[in-house]
Image 1 (cartoon, rainbow, N blue to C red):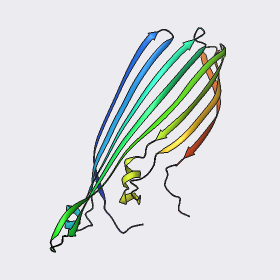
Image 2 (image 1 turned 135 degrees about the horizontal axis):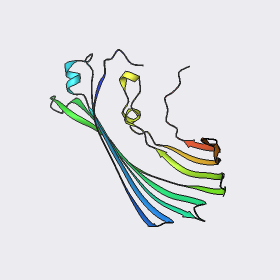
Image 3 (image 1 turned 180 degrees about the vertical axis):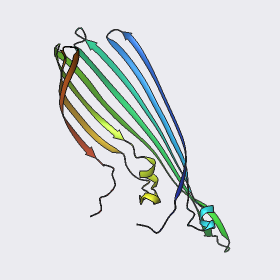
Image 4 (image 1 turned 90 degrees about the horizontal axis):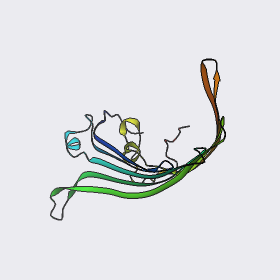
Length: 212
C-alpha cells in the first residue's frame, strides 16, 4: 500500500466494431468480425509536487480482435454447427519522463519507454442436435483468451493496483455439454428448460490478490 493520493486518471477511449456475413446457401454461412479498442491515458495527482505532475507519464493500450466463423446447418436443421478462429493483437506503451544528469553535470529529461507487442490465437466450435423436437443436445469447446485490461497492465494508485506491463493474457480451455427441453405449451403459456455441465481449465489467471 502506498501513501495518501488524490490520483486523477484522464482517459481517451475509442472503440470500433465491424462485422460481415456471407450466406453461401441455406446450409452454409461465413462471418467475419473485427473489434478495435484503444485507451490513451494520462495520470496526475494534486498531492504530488508541481514538478512531479509536470513530468507525469502517459499510458497507451491498443487491442485488435479478429474472428472468422463458419456455420453449417444440416439434416433439416436438426444439426447446427459452427467453428471459429480468433486472432488477438495487443500493443501497450508506457512513457515515464525522468530527470538524469549528463556527463557534464547538467540535468536533462529522458523518457523511459516500456512497450509490448503481443499476438495470440484462439479457436473453438459449438454444435446443437435436435434428438427429438423437444430435446436438443448442446455442446461447445473453446480455447479462450482474455487480454489484460488497462488497469491490470498500467495499475491504478487509487485502487492500490500495481502496474504489471509484462502481464500475460489469461488462457482457458472451456468445455460445455448440456440439453435443452421444450418448447412446452401450457394453455396460453410456453416454456423451455435447459441444463448443462462445464469444465474450465485456466492458465495464468488474472485477478487481484486476496489479503489475509
